[in-house]
Image 1: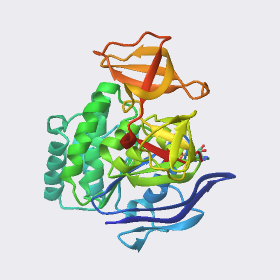
Image 2: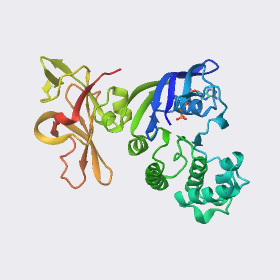
Image 3: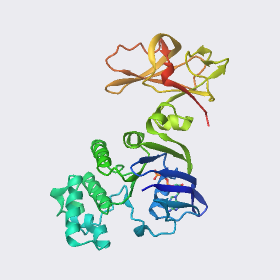
Length: 341
Ligand SMILES: Nc1ncnc2c1ncn2[C@@H]1O[C@H](COP(=O)(O)OP(=O)(O)OP(=O)(O)O)[C@@H](O)[C@H]1O
């Protein structure tokens, strides 16, 4: 079922936590709400879940206006950061909770619980209490519980935030698999982690200061970000001031051939896309940081000291000496112009 937010605005006292959000998530689609802390992502999700009441706007699920419907009657699956399992219930009873509340027949409950635990690889833990599980296992159970009622909509609020890096990567794999297992569910995924958003989302909605800044398919947003904020938040792009004159784009007086002149006063280019090759923009190499498989180089273009350029190069390559002048080729296909808004 489709989730639709029309002009949804939420105030907490004098704080406007969400301002006029318009967003539609189709059945089978995953939309990530991505943004820094306090940008309104969780508030948007809570409004859909029914945990907060919008001061303006409407929320529809499958075309039905649910703005005034209590959370439990919206039939939505919700998973939050802190697992939030019932501590006094065993794993199987946690997963069965929503089904029992809906008075499903005992047999169906048993079968569905087994199915759900199998889906998240937790069959062997059915009799355990939440405190006897690791963080990742608890989160799997929370997902099984949320999906047990076959919700048409699944809301995930930073579900991996409390896990350590390795477990996060594993759970990300599992969430990708899970998406394929529930092909008709509309998923809203709140995160401040761009890697999670890129790995999971069909579309990414970038939030800032209670507003939606940009929304587009994940690849499009990464390759051609419409705004400087999105460019730097999603992938740490280099943003260099440019001059556009007579169809020519120049950076500190150096021509960057092939870049399509468009509206925008900043040239956006990703650190991994820049090549150290002759015929490019000259810059002084001022730093090299080893990152295992690659080096992160920092270069400064004469006249643009405030805009150090980051370049990622494979670690097996010979590096120029720090302090020397290098030539940075900015491949046109990896460059785009963005607005500094
Ligand atoms: N219950 C509340 N009472 C008062 N203010 C709140 C409440 N919940 C959120 N806010 C405020 O609303 C704004 C948006 O908060 P929200 O939790 O939606 O942000 P977020 O983008 O999800 O951030 P985070 O990633 O830190 O969770 C913030 O300024 C926050 O302080």
